[in-house]
Image (cartoon, rainbow, N blue to C red; front, side, top):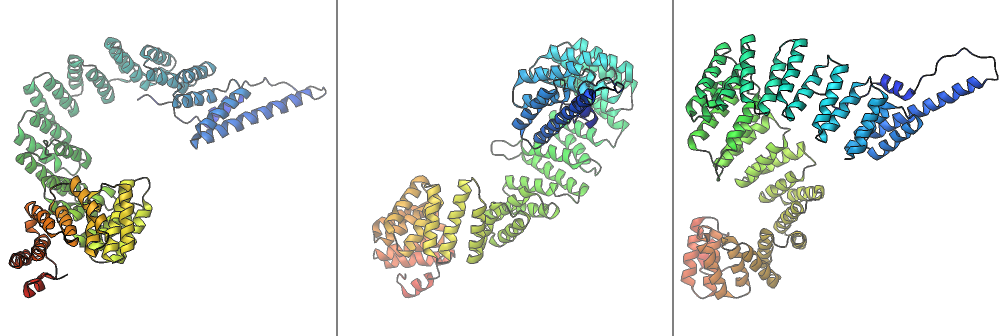
Length: 587
């Protein structure tokens, strides 16, 4: 690999570069001391150059690039032959997108110090950035002429020639290097990559055939050659080569994965799965390439994101093998959680992420997924516990304070909820949507704690961030109607909510209830019947509200029927029993 021009210049080289031309030593003369004065002047200037250069380096390391450029330029003004400053300026000009000055300074560094290889590497890199492939080729050739044993230069030259479609010349560069160091795995791999990238399939095949003859025990060559034959349409030859590789080394799990991929590509699913399962069960094979394959399967779902049933079954089988092979890793559990979540198995997903958190407690995404799944399950107790643990691990992340506050509020721990929400809100920076969620949750918590003025203020703050937040509009309007306060404001908010999200039973019920509180019972009935038709007939509170409306309209028998139905559903208010017993509406 070609070194980049960002390597540290050794201190000795810096000192030599800073010193400028060295004066020839002379015997002291018995004169008036002019020589001594000149020597003192030279030492003073040299010290100034060294100080400027070191200050420039420090500015560069601190990221103060304009200051560094200024100091390097000052160094050059004092010492016009300071090649190290030219080199650093070339890199900094390049960072500043000043291509021409960067190249001029790099070439000046080379002209000043022809013995420094890194200066020439910088020239080559800048030429490649400007797509000057011919110029880069010449620079690499000059490098080889002076440093013929630097094998990374051969690779740079070969790749540059290949990009110019000069494949024959590029291959000759590899032959020249082969004469110097002999054939080895890196040489074959580099030349193969070059040929494959250039689309020279036949040449790549011939190269690997030759490599196998010279090194028949190198199993990776068989797999690479199999890929070449498969790309050429000869799947029979490709399969035979994969099998030969496994015959030579049955424990080579990477080859087994390649063969499995070959079978999947040719729709031989069960054969592919058998080899994948064996490879996934290999504890000596790193878990990351296995995870990469599973992620590939995960991302291959259709428009709905779901995998075919047989492929989903195989993926879960592979995950089971991962758990056995890597029992101390949380990664198998986290990807199992992803699969379960996509499949709609939310309890299974939550349990998988909880297990992942046991093994990898420091991974933020795991805790984020875990509390979100708790919320989807409406499991306030687990969400409270998981959010609290996440806060201890990631105290600067506001997300977990939001879930903690919502969960604690649901558990009727209102002081705890408000404390968490206020703390998390104050951690939010440049994220208005998240800040709005905190104000909304605070509105809910303050209302439940009967701190109504603070609740109203929080809802108003949330709406100042997003005036069309349907959840805030609905909750704020409903709680005002429950208190019988600002009913006109509540009616407008609820109407806007239903315009934004039409046909939602809860929102329709809120609007009907506001009309009820305003004494508009006939209109309330119309809207409540819309709510029931939208699915509200399975919610006890909504059915109870319908009974209340009917009672106010003089239909006591109908009201009693609805109250009994609400009681049977099971989530009606605590007053529904008295309404049934006493046969009347109770505030």
